[in-house]
Amino acid sequence: MLYYSYLNMGGDTGEKFISPTLGELSISEVVNEVCKFVGLDCYAFYRLIIGTDSQTRKSNSEAEIDFVTAIVIHRRGSGGRYFWIRERQRKHYVLRQKIYTETAKSLALAEELVPLIRSKIPPGVYDLEIHIDVGTVGPTREMIKEVVGMVTGSGYTAKTKPESYGASSVADRHT
Image (cartoon, rainbow, N blue to C red; front, top):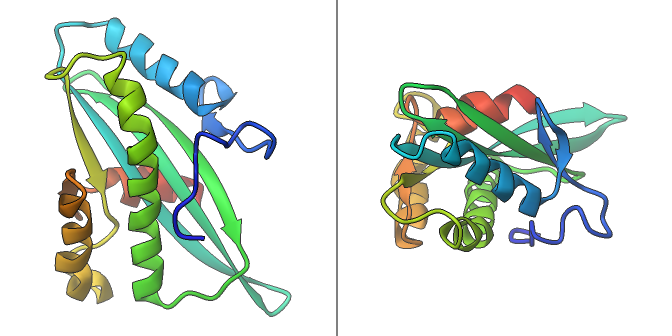
């Protein structure tokens, strides 16, 4: 399943976003926490970041992959907060398929999160960025144009390594 609903997470599935300070939260609680954080300094400018990373593990000769998607709200010059959710799949992915799936998961979350955020935080207070775990060095360099095109074609700003810390550092921490 490439696209799925994060809004349904925390309902019957029991899956929740995790906050390092607050524990388990539904997506609506994440939106409320983002709004509270922005409300602490109404004059600051913010970056709302969504990024996904994955890690493949072998268990009992079967491939298992963890996809971790992070939401980061960063107050420029003054820190930030983040929330993450994990999805575990028993499937073997080649690198290209894994990067496409990571990007698609970030875009799926953005499609659901952005309208909720926009209904509570006025435009011009934040920039939205999709962080993609690809860079100009290594095997992912050949995919940069394709996945950046996926993100920009969806109307979002794409960031790649070394600027894509939402995927390559925050989400990576929990894979």
